[in-house]
Length: 315
Image (cartoon, rainbow, N blue to C red; front, side, top):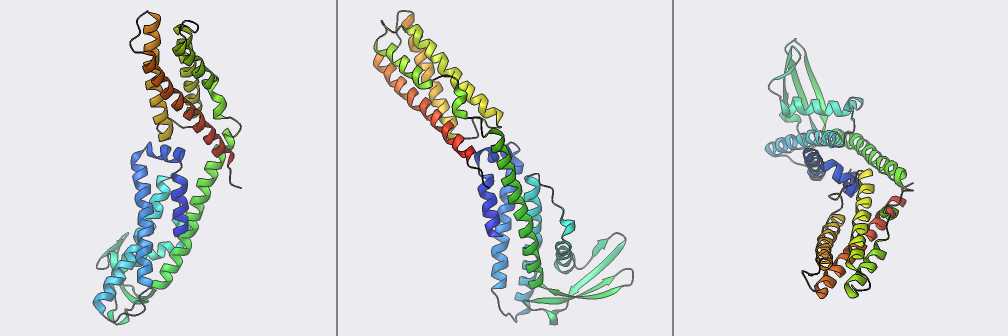
């Protein structure tokens, strides 16, 4: 089970998937808590299985109550994990899972009074039968029935692990399929092509307006700025089409904000230069320009990296 939860963590940590889950923040918290509980209960169950023998009844009761509650909590965690991912899970087809829940409810959940419809039942573990492997459960019912049940804790653990591993395997398949279908849809639409304008060219052209404003007037630099802004806007629109926004990738968000900041300073500079009174020196403008160029080019590199990611489709 551990390998399956690790794979699920890997798949939901992908920026687009994580971003879409976090749109409903309680779903993200539920998902994270569920995976932690699945793994934590596995640790506890492993610890239980490492105990070969125990004769102290007090400790045996503590161990029995603990391991059955772990099995119950683990089932709930898997169910809640699927719910957070909007995956329909039918525990009904796993009869042994249902039986394990009943064993927990009858023996340590609600043993002194359990109600099922109009029938009440009352349960207790036979102390003399109790060991680390299991116990005998005595049950009286208000309709007059009396029954005994032999409970093997080892069998409960084995059956639960087998079935829940199948469920988690299906979750991994679902997440992989969803990711692959999304990639296939946009595989041939390159984000690098979405800019529509040659950002590097306009950055170079703007540089000339800083170095030689007489030969390359500020009006041309302002036009370059508009082209760069439109190019980045086109890129953001292409991301949006894929269900991605600025908040999806921290790297894109920071590069965009830095580029936007520098472009505004350069726009103010060239506008004031055009009016005949520059607000900053050309050396200051050069610093802003280098800052802007570096971050704008980095946005292009990120786009290329995402394109490569969309090429990587698991068979």
